[in-house]
Image (cartoon, rainbow, N blue to C red):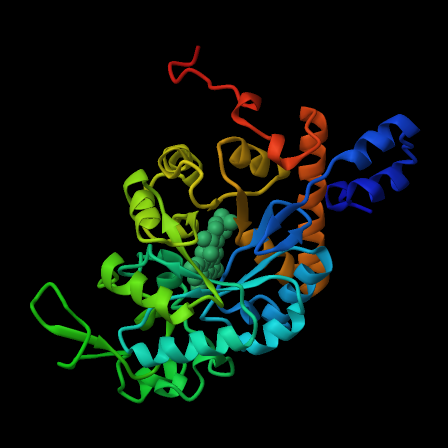
Length: 364
Ligand code: FNR
């Protein structure tokens, strides 16, 4: 193989004819990387974060990701703006845990329908994304004039608001955001804004009206006992305390992979204050910039219970569909085991901040 970095540890050993002696092999096998999440055993403390429109990366899209996750025993998050129905992803996932990422729409009917379908399809939780009151400025999307090609659909909203890709809707003179009077929010110029019509990521992901009292309570009622309610996009102790106060089941410390506010705190820097505020009352997960097993180890050492990865999975998917995602997950799983082994930890629960060294900011 021309790229040794793409070999898992067992493949590498075969390739390099490196044999572990029995003692080393026993130690290696003793390392238990698994954790419990949503009542299931997850092979590593890592899940696949929800990322929209995966068929742009590979024609098998979210199905390839779901199959790879199932094979690897790794939880998957599905974006509301997936290019595959949530039912098809649930079927491909089988009993491997899957959660649905949610943007809460002003037209509650759309959200109600989605939640009903998710419950029926066996989703364990909804992850309400709360870091998108408005869309960040995505320069690459602007430069590339990003539009979902017209042969792709966002099928979770099929038949609702006619689900036209934005390009077509705009050509027909239907701007994605219309103004109305019955719902919505008031913009900076005092106009009522009610996103309706074609459901597109750009018009519907953003919601500046989300509120703890109104929306979290509503969502918890809608999800009932069947699905947990998590919030994704917490980055401060204050918001974490509000989440606990409002009885959410868990939080994901996230800055949307840096796609929203340029200069926002790195999630690894935000994590310790969130963990300190939550005091173990609910699980704290984190995502953003996790690229190696050592990153997972550091996040856990800083108090996270679990991490999620976004882009690396998309790179694997673009490289080789399901096999590419499996390779990505295998490499990370191997690296987690290796990091634990080198640190001398055999259980995930034993990873603690004692394994980290704080470098004095002055450089000494
Ligand atoms: C995302 N992310 C995201 N988050 C979300 O709540 N709903 C979504 O639809 C999407 N879509 C999406 C598309 C793409 C292309 C990317 C890269 C990211 C954010 C995602 O869930 C996660 O927070 C970050 O990707 C984590 O950072 P890393 O691992 O990509 O660095």
